[in-house]
Length: 340
Image (cartoon, rainbow, N blue to C red; front, side, top):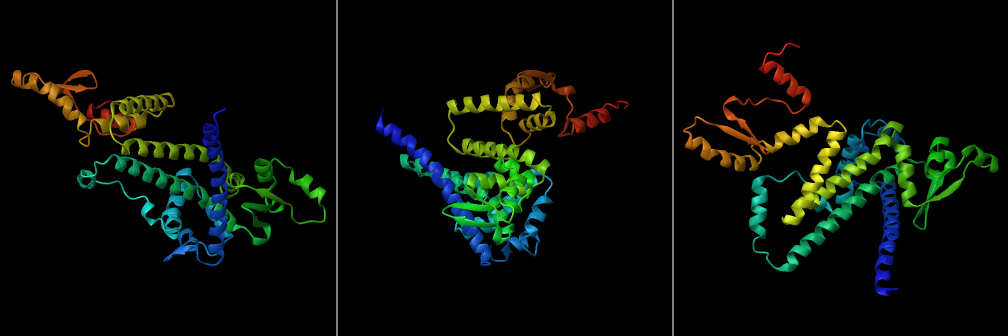
């Protein structure tokens, strides 16, 4: 056995456990600040941002959220305006997409930073920022769940939280803990409490089942998968360009387009195709330069377009409006007077 290699891998496992403990510590601190009316930044508080007047209304509010997109946008709002600023990480708040001018200025600013350590430092900062934001996202809703509970039904103890199962529905107890609450009540007939220890992972699962409706729960894992994809895409497109990276990215894009095609996501494929042909891209200009000599040589008697690897007659081509298949169909029928 290589001891050093073993230590490296052991450290990875240790860090995962430490992150769980740290996350529970953040949840506890968030609750304490909330309990002291200090979980706020300026005029932004849980009450003002959720439009509620009491802690027990948190659950009513979250159960009224009807889509995973809304769950994610609500979490982003609270993370950006309360949690990150409160933790002195206001600089990590997600900003609007930079304009081309912003990107050009940033590029000019970084031209002088040619030392090898700069790229590594920039990458480390990006990794650190993503990690902090990821955990800010993870702890937000578990913190809200604890804030919504009656204080007699939970207590923090050595980086775990002890939850009274008797304050939860039998469906939730079964789904999260695998226990039959009726049998538990029989085992302690004179008691109104039955506490069990929850680590952070269990608390996350309990939060999901308690705060959101059943139909929303089914889609939360899909929403988390989407966020992971967004994070991976952001990381991939922020680094330096290379042929190897471009090849891997292309394979990934093709795989994702195949996924859309196999699942009937034709509207989204059309949006991709429209974007490729739009004025936002320089790629169509490159294709135009291929056919331009033919136009000049024929004195405009022959005009062609290239889309992908296919050549079309430019003189008879028609640009239709539509970013969905249905809109495209309507536009086509209207343009060519198709009877419906």
